[in-house]
Amino acid sequence: MPTIRSLLWVMVFVVLTGCGDILASGPDTPTLTPTPTKTPTRTPTATATITATPTETPLPTNTPKPTATPLPTATETPTPTPEPLPTDTPPPPPTEAPAAAEVESQPEAEAAPAVAAEAQPETEAQA
Image (tube, rainbow, N blue to C red; front, side, top):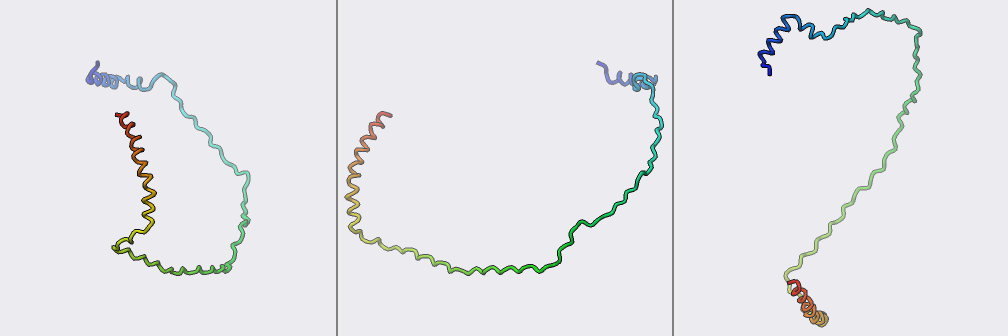
C-alpha cells in the first residue's frame, strides 16, 4: 500500500514535468472556439393602442339603513329559596304497612334455605 509520502512525490513529479496538463485535459479533442453570432435587430411591425372602457358599475349611493328593532330586555326571575334541611327528629311511629311487609317477606325467608342447599353441591363439586 503506498504511503502518503510516495503519493506526494508522484504529484510533485507530475506537476514539475508538465504531465499534469496532459492528464487534466483528457483525450485530445479540438478546442472549440465560439463563433460570434449576429444579433437580430427588431423592427416594430405594428403599434397597439389600448383604450380602456369603463365596465364597472357605479357604486350605489348612500341609502339610509333600516333601524333594527331593539331586543327585549331579559327580566330577572326570582331564584327559588332552598328547602330547609330536616332537623334530627325521630321517625314517625310505624303503622300497619310494615306489618304487611313482614307477612310478605316470610315466604322469601323460607325459600332462602332451599337456595342455599342447592348452592352447596356446586361448591363441593368444585372442591
